[in-house]
Structures are given as C-alpha cells and as structure tokens.
Image (cartoon, rainbow, N blue to C red):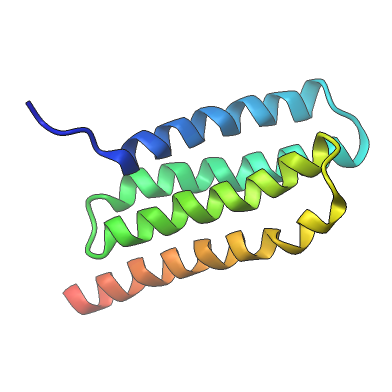
Length: 115
C-alpha cells in the first residue's frame, strides 16, 4: 500500500476550498467582500492545480509546496478580510504571492537545468 502524499492531499483540499469560496463570492457576498473572495479563489484554484501538475516535474515537490502554501496564504488573508477580519491582513497577502512566484521560478529552473 502506498503512503499518503500530503502535498497532493492539500492541493486537492485547496481546490475544493477555492471552488466554495468562489461560489460564495459570486452568489452570497457583495461589494469588496465578493471581490476578495473571487480573487482569492482564482489564485488558490490555479495554484492547487499547478501543485498537482508540478509533482511530475524537476523541483516539482518544492514548487508544489510553494504553490499550496503561497496560494493558501494569499487566499486565506483575502477570505478572512471578506468575512470581517482586520484589513491589516492585506499586508500579508503579498507574501503568499511571493511564494507562488518562487514556485514558478523553481519550475522554470528545473526545466532549464533538465534541458
């Protein structure tokens, strides 16, 4: 029996959360809260899928963790603000974006190094 893969599990759960947040942003929230939910959902979903795809690439596991962690942090701060959390959380959001960028850089480096 193969051991569970925590990265794949978290990526899949991240995708589920992103769909739920996006749906609520589109149908249940209004104003800035709706936009925060839609933006967080968009980035989280893209990077959940990217993490799953990255598993098959050089440096993919490290990139995948950047995608899941960065996408989660980026989205979580936006979701928290949408549900009434303090607006200073918006200052943390770019750290998640930076982690996602690092993940893409890792994939690029892995592809370059492999070629």
